[in-house]
Image (cartoon, rainbow, N blue to C red; front, side, top):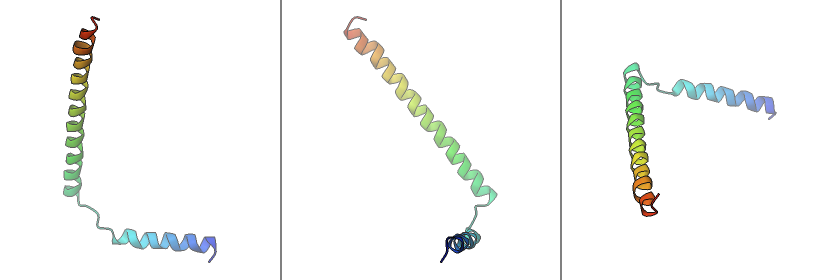
Length: 68
């Protein structure tokens, strides 16, 4: 099998597989989008809180020990 024939077979198989895919409807897509948005906001808040707490620990506790 030549490279061109192999590439053609690959593309044809990809087309067949894409026809088998069950695509989400608008409501499923909207719900999944909201889940991603809310998870991103939640993760952002967690990272921000961790940053603030670690900043306070460094400034107040560690710097306080050395009198800076």
